[in-house]
Image 1 (cartoon, rainbow, N blue to C red):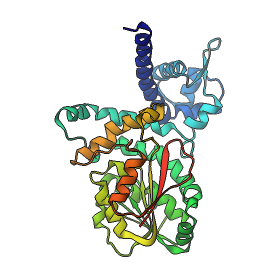
Image 2: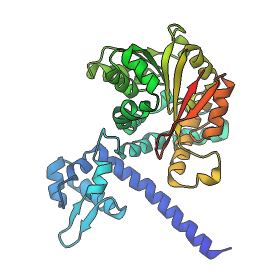
Image 3: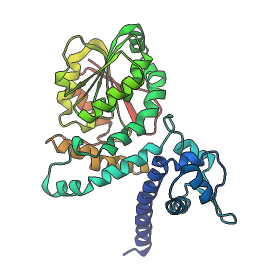
Image 4: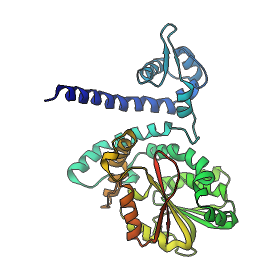
Length: 350
């Protein structure tokens, strides 16, 4: 055996397990407010950090030292003080912005909590339905995406569809399929007050959270259907249909796309957002794709297979995505020129 290759692999194992532990520590940093307490505060002793947060000193001490080891915090050994660099705070202590990355850490605990059940599915088939994931999973998805939807959806992403924007400004209609906790709905209802915005999702807890989000935002032009898409009447048809990061999760995505097409106005647009991966596995050898494959095994693929579905997974890629559109009968697909390290955007027309 090649001893150098073996050593490299051993280092990779340590790195990856370390990454999992670092993600867990960083999740604690976002959930407990430790990162927010350190943002802009300069070097702090553990005692000063405890005073700012009210947390238990022994846990804070071990957390801070672990975050130094992982490269998240800077350390002054001569004063035993810790600091969160401004550049790190921009990503970790910037909740609800479009550059906040802390929501990603929230996916780790709920996905690992269902890992034993996924292990059994590897042996026996089936999977874990979304309704049986812990509530922390809904929360993590919400926190992970909220800033982008709030700050980019209307003001940037949809501007690539100017005719659709004009329709909605004048008073049109939008359907968000798989609306989850309603952050897309809130952004659309706020951005297009003259339009009717409808969200549909079969998950009762998600719809309850979505209704609360709309109520808290004081919006009166949004409504929700807690069901599958076939419960939404085919008329009147919609000017815009959204499917945000959910097509690959569906047990029968082609059937859903056909139902969408039946509800889309003749000049309407279906906007689909999917993970940015390549069709070629050799081009997906990088951390973002590896993250997506993990999300896929522990969340996306398993919830589809739980219902006997296609199990396409988060990394199905552009070719499979386009094939779904074609099989559902759509006539035109355009990949929108939107720069994003994690998302691909498709404008699909009848």
